[in-house]
Length: 122
Image (tube, rainbow, N blue to C red; front, side, top):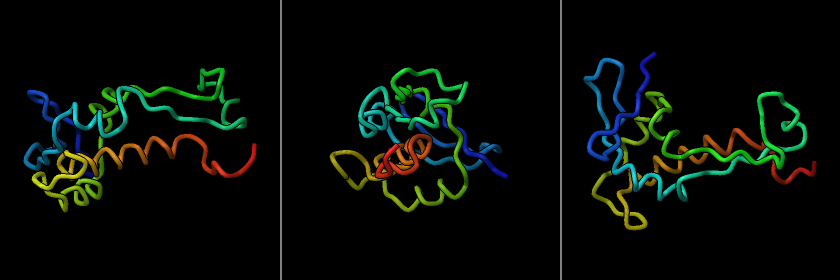
């Protein structure tokens, strides 16, 4: 299965396929970080999840380094195909629409790592 690796060149983020022939420009790395809310993103874990030995947090909140995540997390062809639907010239919140949609996708991925049902009492 083809994976798209993030590549940053001169501050611009792109997702590049394994064979390097397929490339999708996402936008300025600083804009992605800003669209995600800043340099860190909190993931909150419930009481059961906190008992996992790999989770090293006292308060149940793990702060994820957004820039590291953005520049290391590979993506599927499906995600890239969805992002291709968005134009780099269309503004949303003063940023290219594709950049914002990419940031939203990453936030969704990170949020899935924490509490699965935030409405359910612990």
